[in-house]
Length: 86
Image 1 (spheres, rainbow, N blue to C red):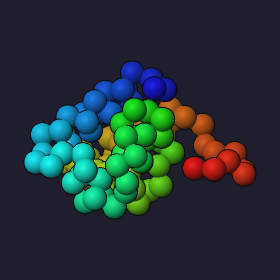
Image 2: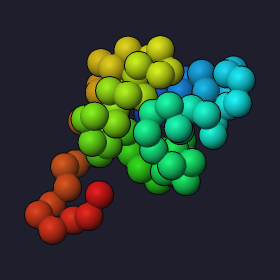
Image 3: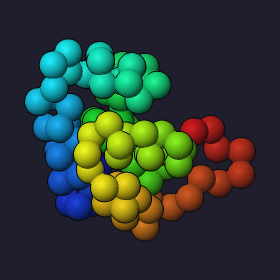
Image 4: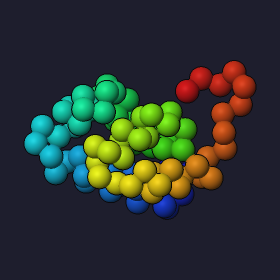
């Protein structure tokens, strides 16, 4: 994790997902991402600040966490350098 705030947001996201029927598989499907990708997000391997905007928006809608709370993590991780793969 890049900082304590991101850890809190990730915990909140995981708790929101785990309260749902079908949990992570159904949540990933609803967002339009794979379970492995969702797992990488929740483990911090894919920082929230580096997610494509569309994915962050869908995560916010599906989880009920305001998109500005997810987006507030943008200062936690520097932007990708040219040629970096997301």
